Amino acid sequence: MMNEKLNWIKSFEKPLTIAGPCSAESEKQMMETAERIDKNYVQAFRAGIWKPRTKPNCFEGVGAIGLNWLKKVKDEFQFKIATEVATANHVKLALEYDVDFLWIGARSTANPFAVQEIAEALKDTDKVVLVKNPVNPDLELWIGAIERLRQQNIQNLGVIHRGFSTYKKTKYRNNPQWQIALDLMDKMPEIPIICDPSHICGNREGLFDVAQQAYNFEYDGLMVETHPNPDEAWSDAKQQITPERLLEILQKLELRKSDDEDAMYHLNLARLRNEIDENDQNILENIAQRMLISTQIGELKKEHNVAVFQPERWKQIRENAVTQGGKLGLSAEFIDKLVRAIHQESILHQNLIMNKENPIKSE
Ligand code: PEP
Ligand code: MN
Image (cartoon, rainbow, N blue to C red):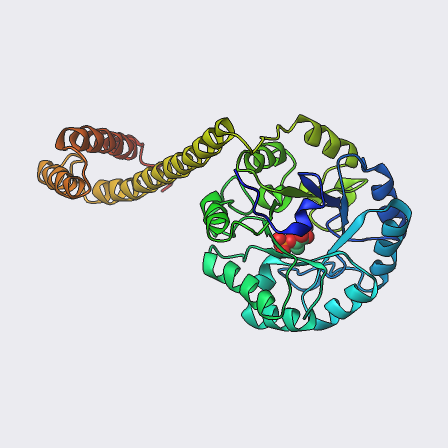
């Protein structure tokens, strides 16, 4: 495959790895992290200076003093340095301290006023500006942020995929919804894309799998939160890992080569399999939701002494499904098997409710 990515990323050996703490906490913590990170695998050091927090009265970052520490990391260890900017003043300070990569956080990307303010403050910069996906799964909002930066003549752009917020609890802190990032890659193939498995997972255990998935999709790099003593971190403690654990993960990851037919086959296969997996997940969640509703109906039936199996209702469900399925190109035979299995499982759930002993009432 032709490498049509923007030039700035080509100056790094693929993959670009950015590591460092969620938040700068002290000079000692920053220097120790930088010291322990393996320079053969990591080219850039991250640290949050100003932290966007969901609730007030949490640790909101050390503020501008942390930029001194970040600069010291750059000078002593020759890392590129990266931090989040959310206002014009953050931009001004980050540029004064010669920060190399400035990223726009997920909450800011969701707010066009904030993006516009940051873009204007960065006008004409040749620094690298990375746009995290917005907290909500909205591809156009993500693209809109890139367009706002381009309008201010900012050329060295990239994106960070950190997953999307959901009300429903899943195994992820932020659901990756890979398809949104893959669609962005199709629409803007020149924009380098970096995966942030830390904010996708919200834990340490899932990091490897998410990072490997990103490599399978030929992402250009990773950003991983790394702390000398993760359990004691002042923010995002659960998802941070030590520099030594980071090295283990990076050494285990398999990078796919991107320049022959075989690689194209694997990339296409990985994309399609991801679509299947996301679909299967939706099917399972919908079936589980259906069983919950059916349990509630079971409770109503019990209260009103109504039999679980209602032949009329079953006939109606089946006919409906066959008609709807037919319109979607699914055979009557398949639909019949599918609804039968689902209906039987529902009945099972309702029978459990019916047969549950009534709690013995005292008095
Ligand atoms: C972060 O990188 O520490 C951060 C706050 O990320 P996000 O904007 O993705 O929540
Ligand atoms: Mn964080």
